[in-house]
Amino acid sequence: MIKNDRQYRITKAQVRAFSAAVSNVRTEPVPAGMDRRLADIQRRALKSQLEEMTSDVEAYEALKAGKVMDFEAQSLNDLPVLLVKARIVRGMKQKELAERLHVKEQQVQRWESNDFHGVSIETLKAVADALSVELAVSASLAPAAQES
Image 1 (cartoon, one colour):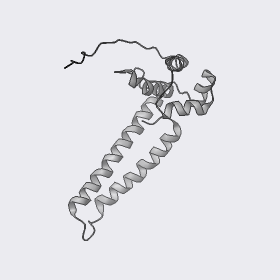
Image 2 (cartoon, one colour):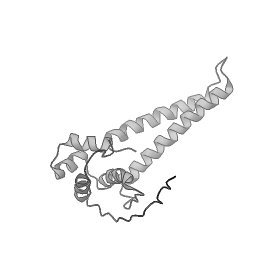
Image 3 (tube, rainbow, N blue to C red):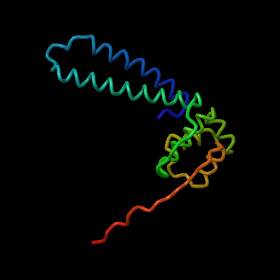
Image 4 (tube, rainbow, N blue to C red):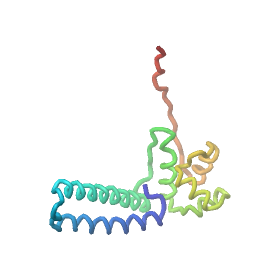
């Protein structure tokens, strides 16, 4: 997932480079001595990577344009991504979020790059509040493990 404008610019550049590489692999003859299957695997790998990066760019652009306003989290593990998406939709830079939370911009960068790993529930709540995120929570118990 692209989390900020810098990552967006880098990924856009990579999309252009991979697009050229896919075109080159498609038009260039298979080098002498190279198995055609290996060349096909290389082409498919490049194409797959290009599709993934293109999808990430499109998702970021949709968030920036405010085309997505509702997000669903299947578990608490999904909450960090949801908060990053909310910040992007709000058009808020990491610096602005940091100011609202009274922390340094680098702290927000660390939280997001680590998917908020190790932060407290209070911090997650403060981030959600700063982004005006309304959470609807439901819980269900998984079946208990059978003891043998």
